[in-house]
Length: 241
Image (cartoon, rainbow, N blue to C red; front, side, top):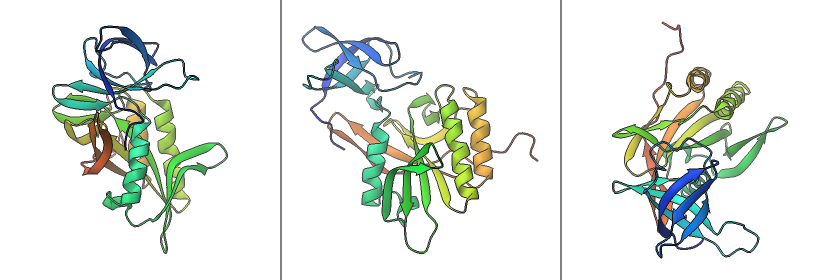
């Protein structure tokens, strides 16, 4: 995945109102950038961090920069939570994720039920469809380990319940956790940050929902899925033997 324009390195002043960030540009001037990340962004958005911005010259857009990456300790962390879906679409087409390589048909934003949409619906001959929901995983509190979520996400729990319903309908369904940073190679569920999501994950896995993880290669030059990673382990439901 290529960025729409070459990224500009800047220094973060502060992030506020969730979707805004003030930065210092290379020439010393200050600007406000769009931050396409509703999460807590723990450990990836502290004042003084080196950040990479995508500039634009669209007169219809109020902000002229979009915050795409944070650079910290030699690693890159993805900020824009929409990036993983674009990366996964490219990876599905290129068949670089073995778990999904047997479904040549790819439909993005596939409708499920009356109101819901799932990120991808995969189809192929002589097999049930595979529905895939993608999550960007950027939190890391231990070396090499990325965790999801970084804050309470009722929407994420809802997605898990929908995937379980899909499995009960006779299709297959999977969560794909994209490790959206270059210093981690395995994923886990942050049960202490959102116990309800952890319980929903356990219930979905018990219902037959599959779980996978993928590594992302990130740099100011572009981003892509490089291959599978260690996925969150199958949990035990509370109270189970």
